[in-house]
Image 1 (cartoon, rainbow, N blue to C red):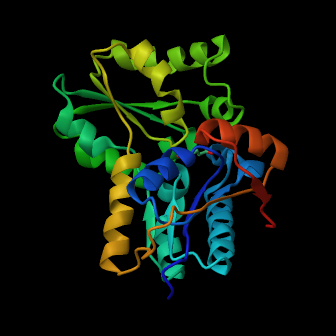
Image 2 (image 1 turned 45 degrees about the vertical axis):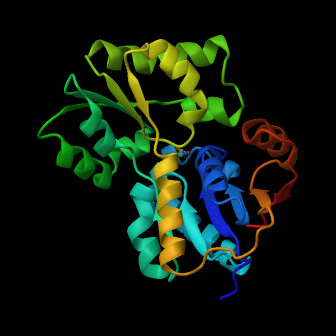
Length: 264
Ligand code: DGL
């Protein structure tokens, strides 16, 4: 394996950019190949079988682009499919999951909130995760219909987005949660709004940095870190509309980017 191969990252849409940003910060010399599967966003209302098949197809495509590791930057896809993906593909596959563990270690009130998509809230692997940490803390799960769609539109600050965020965050705050875990990679883009509505006393946890550290660990262990000291390339694909993606990806990534059409 050569060392210039990209790290493949995918999500149902643009949410995984919140994870890719942390990987970019941690690994400035790596190439990152990102696929926003926006034609199929949100995954939250798709079947487990669909999510699994789609994840396989995207990983296969990234392998053809010589990816050396895959980051499933989507809680829904991780919780629905990661075991079967790891059984099929023989390269490091790193997933994301809601930060219930760090939240349960940090809470002082003993109540934590978890914001997730509806599909994640129904996933068996998610129920197991909640159960594992429910002995010592109370975990309030909030399925947040519609938030992924707002982020996909780049609508991070409108009155409609604020109302939706308030509908989900206020009950968590009122239940006594002093820590809220963001269990969907789209939600960190709404963090300022979530923090404002939750109030300063509430600690918001996202897992992007922890995932980036895990990517560094895995690539180090496998001896697959890029050897070059040139800045890494960012390569973006979308399965949705390229023009729409160019605007939203550039906005969320913080600089103008060119987007390629994903052929699958
Ligand atoms: N960013 C995805 C996640 O972390 C959103 C899933 C969806 O499209 O419903 O769960």
